[in-house]
Amino acid sequence: MGVVNVTPDSFSDGGRFLDPAAAIAHGRALVGEGADIVDVGGESTRPGAAPVDEEEERRRVLPVVEGLVGAGALVSVDTVKLEVARPALDAGAGYVNDVTAFRAAPGMAALVAERGATCCLMHMRGEPRTMQDDPRYEDVVSEVKGFLEERLAFAVAEGVSEEKIHLDPGIGFGKTAAHNLELLRRLPELTALGRPVVIGTSRKSFLGRIASHPPRAVDARLPGTIATNVLALAAGARVFRVHDVAPVRDALTVAAALLAGA
Ligand code: HH2
Image (cartoon, rainbow, N blue to C red):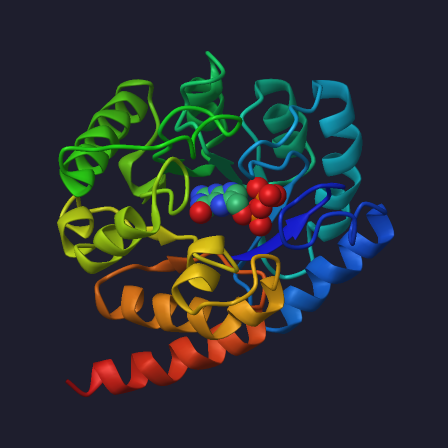
């Protein structure tokens, strides 16, 4: 899953693809690099990000969704708003990536069910503005697992077909570096839920902290991104949400060949 952020303030590429033509060209390039899904988002979820109103989010996202439909990949809309998801699905998107796992917008699950779209249900502790203020868990993996289990049951009860549901532990969403590592280490406990697990470590700050990089050296996080995605593949993850599709796809292809021989 390649990331297309149509935002001025995303943590790693904010402002680079705010122009729809630039965002569409970037999305097409990611498809060319081998992305099976392109995830288009118009609101940053980085810690402390300012909320975006619905009309502005639609203005950012819809032309890009329209421009990427037919480019050779499934188009995903990364939104928590019903009236952004609905017109994106009307325009041909087939995947809804809701980082609140259907908790923000009543009706989101029913919309996904009605359209037969695929969706990603992600765990987040708190909300982006405050989620990194001293997050604590008794046992992060069992709490995330319990949450995803409950959200999966909710989505199915709302009519979403189970085969259309992906689950995501929400790396960095209300979690310390130690929590992120524990979730990655114990991923088989989440794949045991029986649905494809999505992993989003790409360029996230914990990778830079572990490798002792300067705080804003985002591009230097590619090796850490590759390491975490390869190990997540070995632990059973199936969807890898990344900004740098070509190098991660290459690493995953080689790792998959090696694992297939095991
Ligand atoms: N991470 C981000 C945004 N959306 N969705 C899922 N399912 N999983 C993730 O880990 C995830 C996500 C944050 O990354 P990015 O989109 O690059 O940054 P920003 O939120 O600042 O736009």
